Length: 492
Image (cartoon, rainbow, N blue to C red; front, side, top):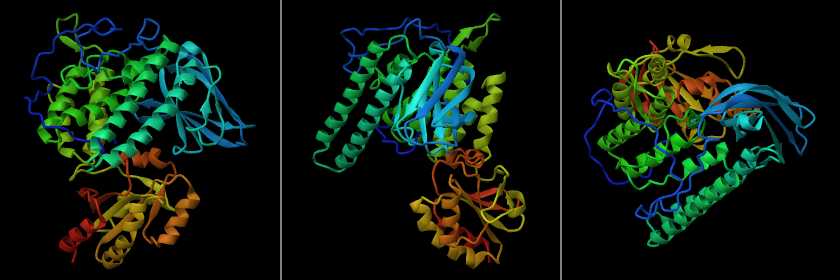
C-alpha cells in the first residue's frame, strides 16, 4: 500500500542502472554525526542523532511480555505479530483472563511488534528491546491504539507519547491538505503543515534526549530525514547494515516520501528513483576471494521487496516488472539464500500478472461447505473473484451491478466467488443476506491478515480478478462495468 495516494513532484530523467551494470565499490560505515555544520541546509540544521554504542546494533534476547485492561475484557484472544516494515507476521497468541494477559517468554530482536485484540482490525504497535528484559502494557479500554500506556518500559512510555502526537499531527495535516487543494490560500495551509512537521521534529529530538541509548531514540533519529530535500544525499543518514531497521516502518515511509519528492510521476522517474534506492541499500564490502558482497543482504532484499510490493499495490505493474527484471530475476542479481528468498517472495506478485495462474484456495462458505477455486473455475468459462467486505461502501455500490451481470450471464458460462475480508462472522453473513449475493461467498475471518488476502496482495476493497477455466488471470478490472464489457465480447 505504500505508494498509494502519492503526491508527485517534478519529473526526473537520469540514466537507468540495473543491478550488474556498474561495479559496486566497497564501502565502510561512516561515523555517527551528532551535530551538523553551519553550511548545511535548513533541513539538516536542527538534526539530532540518537545513535550510540548502546543502540547501534541489533539486540537479541529473551523477554517477557505482559499486560492488563482497566475495563472488563475476558476470554478474548490476544495476538502477537512480528513486523517487517508495514507487514505483520503472527508469532504467538494468548487468552485475556481476569483482565490480564501474558505471553510465554521468547527470543526477540529489538524493533516493532504488534498486539491485536480479537482480530487484526484492533492493533497497536509496541517496541520490544531485550535490553529491558520485560515489557508490561496497560490498556484503558478494549480499543488498543488509543488507550495503551506503560509504567515500566522506557521504550514504550516514550513511544506512546510520540504515537499520540503523530496521530494528531497527521489528522491536522490531512485537513490542511484538503483545504489547500485549489485554494488561493494554499501557501498558508502549506505553512501550517510545515509547522506540524516542525513540532514533531522537536518532539523527536526531545525524546532522543530523554531516552538515550534506546531503540526509540534510534527510531526518532531515522524519522528526522535530515536530507529530505536533497536527492543525492537523501539516504545518507541511514545505515543499511543495521538489520533492526527492518522491524520498523522507516524504510517504507522513506521510500514513499522519496518517490513523492523525486519521481516526477513518470515511468522513467519512478525507475530512476528505484535505482537510487537500490544503490543506497546495496552496501558492499570486499570478500576474502576479492569479490564484492553485500554487507547485509537481508536489509537489501527487504528494501527491494518493499518497493515491489508498494508499486504492485498502487497498480504500477510496469514498474514491478522493471524491479523484478533488474533486481530479482536478472542473471546479475546475486545468488545465495537472500537471492532465493527474494525470488520466492517476488513470485507471489509475478503470479498475479495477466496470463499467470494465481494461488488456489479452499475456504469455508458462509452457508456451510467449502469452495475450492480450482474446481469452481472449471465449471465456467470465466469466473470473477471479488474481494469485498461488509463495511466497504464501494462494494455496496458495485454489488447491485454485479447481481444484474451475474443473472444475465450465469447460464452462459460466468461464475462469481466472493471473498470477504471481514473479521466478524455475523457482519459478513448479514451483508451476504441483505445484499442478496447468491453466488458462493467465503471468508477466513481475519481481515487483511487472512492468508488468501495476503496471497492475492489485497490492500483495498473491492479488488477483482477475472479468471478463465484454466485459472489464468485474463482481466484485473477496477469496476464491474469493465467485467461487463469483457463478457459482452467474449460470452454469447
